[in-house]
Structures are given as C-alpha cells and as structure tokens.
Length: 142
Length: 87
Image (cartoon, rainbow over all chains, first blue to last red; front, side, top):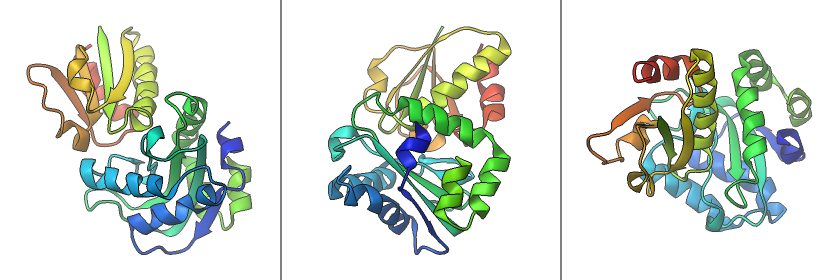
C-alpha cells in the first residue's frame, strides 16, 4: 500500500533552501496529478507554523500533512529525498526524507501509515534510502 | 485504562504514535484502550493518559490529567520509559 502510493511520486534533490520549499517541492507530483490542491500545500505549512515541527517523526524523517478538507482530492503520498538535509526546527535534527501525506478521509491512509511505521523502524533501510541516488533505487528499497 | 494519543490533525502523527503505544503495551504485557485524535477535540475526550509530542503537549491545556510528552514520535524506547511508569 505504501509502495503503491509512492509509485512515480518519489523525487531526489541534493539541496533545498528551507523546509517550506521542501514541502512545496515534495508536493509537486501530487499537484500535477490533481491529488491535492494548492491550498493543501499552504495548509501543511501553516500547520507547522501554528503547532510546531511535530511532523518530524524522528531524526531525518518528516511527514507533513493536513486535514482531508484542506484540499485533498485523493488519498496519496509523495517522498522527497534531500541529500544534504533541511532543517525544520533548531530543536530537531535535519530532515532527509520528506513524506507528504494527503489523506482523503479519516481512515483510507491507515494501511500506508502502518507500512511507513514498519519502514521507519528499520534503521538500515533508512540509511540506504538516504544514500540512494535516484528515485528508482528508493522505490525498490521500499 | 484509556490512552488518548493527540496530534495537530488527529490522523497522521497520532496514528503512528498509536501504533507504537500498542507495540509498547504488548511488550510490557499490558492492555489498554488506545485511540488517537486531534488537539482541538482532545480536551472533551476522557482518558487516563494523554500522549503527544512536546510541541503539541505545550498547546494542550487540560489540567489535572496524566500527560506524556515525547521528543521523538518513533522512539519506542522513550515511549516505554515515559509511559511505563503510569501503567
């Protein structure tokens, strides 16, 4: 389910200016497919500005998201790998993997999150994904 | 016992934490009723223990309840240590 959702939605960059840009860039494949609307991207950023960087799930990994009614047309996910990392907060370690979560309702994304949770428990796998040079390699690792 | 896990929207981070809470309960051989919700509706939900990340917990104003604030959502060792004392 996680892998299916991420198909063709994985991007790789070396550097990105800041966390807001990282969220915008990571959202691009979902915007192009009309899975989400522009306002959903703004909402994810506003969320972090209001409530803090709680979307940083662990060192190196963030999962920005907002509410279904904030502009989600279809449950979807994307991944942006930032080779040199990007800071979401001075209190948190830099983030290399930005998983954008767009939940179309309150439960259709649950299976994917169970998959993501299992993936994030595997530190070696995370190392490999962070080291991977292109989106195809990352897709095959997931 | 009822445990309520909170995050900003009640559908992403809190669900990931709920999965970890269930894992930790199992490891510790404990049972509890675990659910997740968003910060705005959390105060009206009754629970024995409220769990959230530190930044979310700072915005949770319900008094007189047990609160567990986490630095790292995916760190089950931190969760085990902080939640374990209340189980």
